[in-house]
Each structure stands twice: as structure tokens, then as C-alpha cells.
Amino acid sequence: MDEKKAAILGEIPRLRRYARSLLRDRDSADDLVQDCLERALVRLDNWQTGDSPRRWLFTIMHHLFIDQMRKVNRRGEAAMLPLEAREAQAAPAEQVESIASREIIDALQAISPDRRAALVMVAIEGFSYAEAANILGVPAGTLMSRIARGRDELRGLLDDAARRRAIRIVEK
Image (tube, rainbow, N blue to C red; front, side):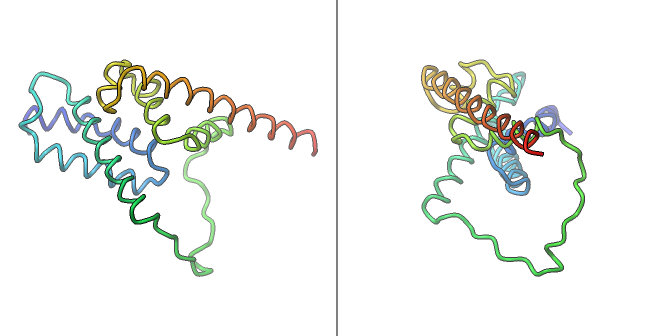
């Protein structure tokens, strides 16, 4: 395997994490990662060897995500079909998650996609403000505004969740 393809393969876990933060569905996130990788491999000559492919791949993924959201807005969201009784049986969770981490993930999913993308790029993926602004295709000031508003919104959502949890404990 050549050097470029090996470097791209090394970025897959980060791409999956970012895609899952943008989309609420694991399968849709995996499809987004696959589309990103396909586009990257077709346009492999656009990436400069020696540089990390990370920013290039995240830019591709973000543009694909925006295109996907535009399609959904034009066509409307897909509706889930009702399951038959035998298909609707619950299965135990494969991974145990703490209440706090679940609340954080839920709160992150509840904020707008623009703010969520900005927060994930900087706070989780570790991009600088300038890099994240470049990847998202917005001015640095807009990115900082989205991050500030997203953090405020997250704080409010998490405070509400903590209050609800405290009320449930007191009521029992």
C-alpha cells in the first residue's frame, strides 16, 4: 500500500467520530465516511504528499455533509416504517454508558448542526480556530461565534438535564 493511502486509512477513526457527531444515525455516519473516502481516493492527486491528510479529508466530509443536508431539505426527511412486533423486541445495550456521557451526547445532538460542527472540530478533533474555519468554509469570527453560542446552548441543555435528574431522585 502506498504512503498516501496508508495516511488516509489512519484518519478513518477520526472521520467516523466526526461523522457520528454530525449525524445521529450510525449507519448514515458510516455512509458519509465511505463517501468521503471514495471521493478522496478518486481525487488523491489533489492532496499534497508530506502534509497530513486530516484537514483535506475533513473538508471533503464537511462538503458532503452540507450537500446531504441540502438534499434532505429539498426532499424532506425519510420516514421510518413501523416495525412488526417480533422486530420491535428490545435487545440489551452492547456498551454501558454513564448517564453523564449520554446526556452530553444528547445535548450535543440537540444543538444546530453548524454549532455542533464548529464545537466538534475545535473541542473534540483538536483543530485550531483557523483550521476549523477553513475546513467549514466560514470566517474565523463566524466560527468563534458558533462555538460560543454552541457552548452556551450546551450549558443550558446540560443544566436542564441535571435539574430533571435531581427532581427524579427527590421524587422517588
